[in-house]
Image (cartoon, rainbow, N blue to C red; front, side, top):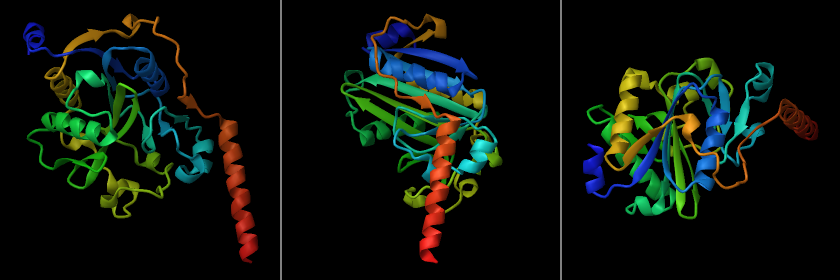
Length: 269
């Protein structure tokens, strides 16, 4: 759709930022700033991140979600992001798509998780049209019963962000850093990580997916592409809650976990 025709249909403007290999911590800091301190709509596409990194939701607890010994030994960075959702291991084979929107610019979407999720499912339904088995299942994107896209959200007043990590491919070893969480989707059926997820590369080319996603977003917004250095640094101040956990924090958590475990064993004996 041409920009002139889109404007004629009254579509809102959305800034498009295309990244490649940007560190996920940098991307999350950017997204948090744009959500809280900008008044524009944004679509951010990052084709891979530079290093294997664990990203947890804002309420995630490392002792419950991570195999801390191997994480510390292998020096895997651990980030707590500003949004909710689960824990993922991301790397160069992960494709990230983030949508930051004003409520009034998507009037059919209520600023509630289920409504935003349904809207995103419809959007990606266009991206994966013709590919058998695509569904929005609970809060995940799946082919059949295997997950390839995990989602997280934050809703702040009249603005919200919906961001997704797509597993174009994954390293089996990276999955070993994750524990099976206590709360899982019903359709998971106690499957371990490698039986639960699938590789998107078995269904669609990476570049085709990115272009189809941008085209799908372009049916609902007038897209204006910006480079990273064109993003205005004069946005208002905001509290930055996304952060990298220190190695000392992880070691302290592991030590406390081990102490609690030994005390429990001693009491049982």
